[in-house]
Image 1 (cartoon, one colour):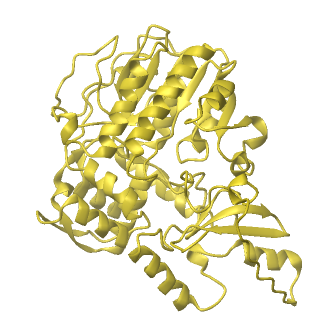
Image 2 (image 1 turned 135 degrees about the horizontal axis):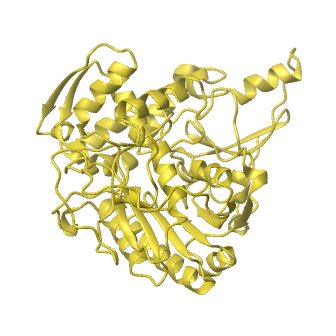
Length: 465
């Protein structure tokens, strides 16, 4: 869930304040094959970016990924079909190099969680990206932001929402035509919004909730978000504007929780809203009950303070909706829940590692020069076949648990949550298989060589790296 202002664009639509979901506009662009394009994807290790890459490839486009740690992308199923270059959106030289020969550049990164100056980092990164796109001759920038409430001035928004809005304005004001997609709650297996909804509903049959559970929102399925992102690549060059992207249903968060309970086959939940739970308090409550940590839960809950409903559906003029799309809220829920049950979750909200996290940088980087590295080597002979042993090693953590002293691990996880860390509740993306870059409880998979090596880097609160 992100938030984005609705800045004035060069081809603006007249805003309408609807009481019901806006009906799709009649397509003005025929549904025809699109010539292959060269696309740059930033944030490919993240939730949306990791799913967008295979969709772009399926549409016939070529893809180049810009990543701070290219090794974290190597185990993705599509890794051999893309070009990956090392770089960072805060480094102009690496961005310019990555944009050479690119038609469409996707900006799917943000600095939330990197410290108190994340707004400044977001602003500088967006300006660098826009300027280097101009210098490289990029034809279009595509940015996924979020939906902000109508009539609420920027100074009343949270820093997170305000920053997302500013990034969108920077792209729309740049010389390169931009498409800014604004979504509210994104429903898909592994999304932070879905995980928050899922755990709150499954774990709490009776809930004393904040008053924002009465706030109306217009969620969208991740499949439709990806469809709009892919389709945005082929927009005419004279289109430079923001688009609201939503599903057909306007619901309250209370209705979303009851809807999840119905789809999941759970008894009806009793939900009692109380006005005394502020966004700050409720984010701690969400962090306690769900795998989503306080640092991410707070901007998510702050986003629910105001009603966010689409004011237009002009995106359908350029990316026509096929029959039966966009997905309804219930359809998006059912698909996401089925993916979780089938253990086919392609990416999770915890997929992306933030700059400055304990798992970044790698030990071979120059930052470690002069430091002390202590090793603890242990050997044990096991009466088991290598393949069977490896299945146990690769299956560690998450719902599978740890090798020994489960109570001690649980206590360590609670202590980490209490200290502001991620704790053990991030779990695993897949119950049996790991890949480089995966989050694993309060670890990050730094290296994996099937049958030989599994190296984890700690992301829990520690006095050192």
